[in-house]
Image (cartoon, rainbow, N blue to C red; front, side):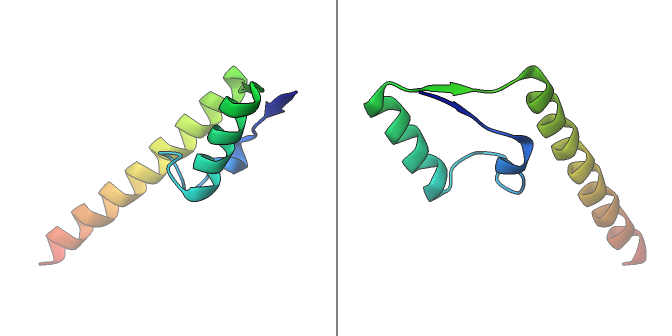
Length: 67
């Protein structure tokens, strides 16, 4: 079986370390299934993560300017 993950699966879990991902990886390894991830999904995930990081940095910078 092949399992394909979309960008939404990674949203707000950039390090894929929550219980659901651990269970998925354990299942994939034990059943010898394949995890598929397209280049497009990888690019989308990276773009969203970068955009959120910039927003956080801009917010932090604004807070420091106020203080």
